[in-house]
Amino acid sequence: MSAPSNQNGLRARKKQRTRTALLDAGLDLFLTKGYEATTIDEITAEVEVSSRTFFRYFASKEDLALAKGAEFDDLMLDALTARPADEPPLAALRHAALDMVRESASGDGVGRFLRVQHLITNTPSLLAGNLRRLANNEERLTVEIAARQGVDPATDLRPRVLVGMVCAALRIGLQATCADPGRDLARMVELVEAAIDLATTGIPQRWGDDPHAW
Image (cartoon, rainbow, N blue to C red):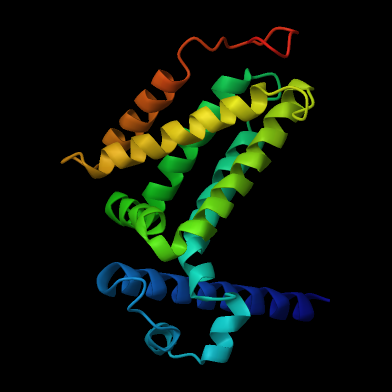
């Protein structure tokens, strides 16, 4: 029983290594040459795999370019679902955003994290796909906040409004970090935190029963 299980584990790790290598190679080329100027053949040549192997992991060059952003989205949702069930919605979402920033930047390095964010949000040919990704992430976060509060997001706008404000502040904080000469992890977290606090000033920790008022 253990041999097949070990083989499955080895295959899974090999697949993950190949996917990570393709992702890293693609992003490195996008950041140095530009997204439009980079071809799939150049990405596969860096990893020494075939284009057929590339398409086992990514549907397109755009899919690879947005994959890192999708990972960040998953980190934020996972961080939110891991927060205590009785934690107020604003506090839970704020912690989730900051945890995502810390984990992502710690793993990739602040400079590369910011450059990838800039690439994703400032490449016109990626704009439509990126907007779909952002909208999908906000919807998932909205559903989670609504479930935690026991409300229906179709009739209670507070979860959607709160998520929209925090996600917009997150983007503003990251943009501010790009323009900041320090660009270290502590400064990035500080700027994101400040943007979220500014955006959500006046929102109480606990919501009332009226869906039309905080």
